[in-house]
Image 1 (cartoon, rainbow, N blue to C red):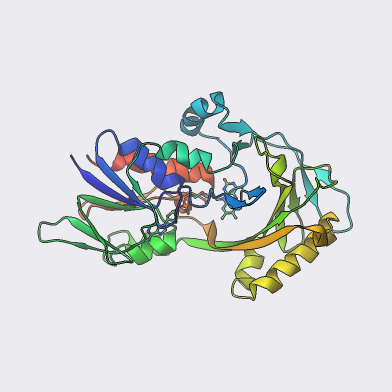
Image 2: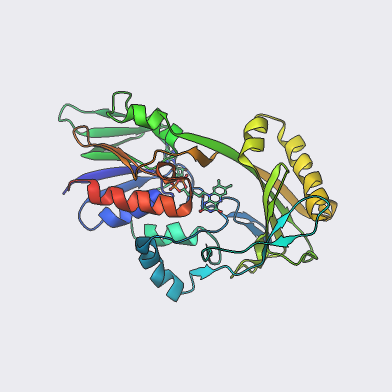
Length: 324
Ligand code: FAD
């Protein structure tokens, strides 16, 4: 049986692994302690936050079909919460939706965990390098010196920059890979004693360092104390990535008060997460990258545009292209 190592257990890596698992010997390596990558959930006592992906669309038939059983079981739910546009000094304006939007329930990582169920996933294992052995098979080394392999194929399902650091420089698609650009984002996580007095569940914010605010605990299935999630625009994050985290967090809390009238001094819990690679202003423009002669490939949201649906499409398309 063809042996395949997949680096990264986000949605792209989990989807790819699931699609290949019946006909190949698949091992997934994940550096974090859990599955899901940027479809992440932060637990903080009585609070819980989707501090990565907020919601997702399902525009392709393939993704809609894959979601059907999850929707039937209530693991994925259409989010009908009121989403508005906000700007300082102006009233909230309700935004119309072109497509239904979904959340996994009760937390976003339910979706990647569904695809990863029953697979061979090695967590807390950061792959640091790879090389070919005398028989032409791939061997992986993790950052603690552990060795893994041999494998016929290695696929990186990590963000594009980490993928280019991991794969050998002479992989045939290195030039294409280097053209992808990803950008950062800060997420501020706020927990309150009482539900906030706002009449919306999500807000796109205009002319502000803040790009998005969600009443996280109002999303379907969340049974946590009032939790609010704030995300910056990517441009503001890029300009402030290396700044003092406490200053960044306070700036964003002050800004939240200015644009949404939320008294952030009443927060019982406040923390911040810096995403170095969150979104993809310049995607690859094709579903995946593959070098058949070398037995190397790469997939991820960054191939198509940087959204949950793109991660799924990239992983499932690559599964059809690997000759096994
Ligand atoms: P990832 O989820 O990044 O998975 C890659 C995995 O590889 C990670 O788990 C990482 O730990 C692992 N990894 C990396 N290097 C190594 C290594 N060396 N060894 C082992 N493991 C490694 N999308 C939407 O559709 N809607 C939204 O509202 C939305 N909002 C977002 C908000 C934020 C703040 C962020 C960060 C993202 C958002 N996205 C949104 C994007 C969405 O989260 C991604 O498109 C999707 O989760 C990407 O999945 P992926 O599998 O391609 O990558």
